[in-house]
Figure 1 (cartoon, helix red, strand yellow):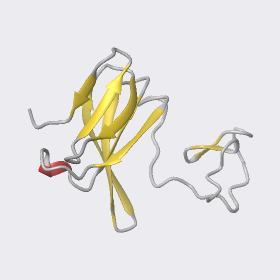
Figure 2 (cartoon, helix red, strand yellow; figure 1 turned 45 degrees about the vertical axis):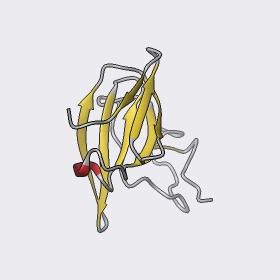
Figure 3 (tube, helix red, strand yellow; figure 1 turned 120 degrees about the horizontal axis):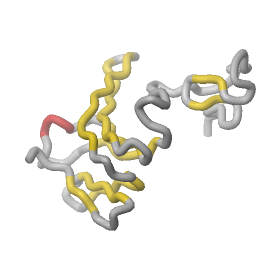
Length: 117
């Protein structure tokens, strides 16, 4: 229900206009990345499965263009973001199964499961 700045902001940067935009009343993101890291964020899920214990509680998301996957979590008011894998795939969606395990699909027609291997 908040105003996340569409059309004025792109992430934490001014978009329209390109600088000096009015941020009053906008809810800015807790994390953003620049175009050198990716160009189209694909939203994910907070991992809650038993298969990758080190990811429990991390929000896992990716980028369609770069194929990168990151984990993000809040430590108080600070965001911590770590690179998890560079897939080289056009990541289009994330999903979870009945065991809370995380998957993503890409434009190669396959579904991939996160694992420690």
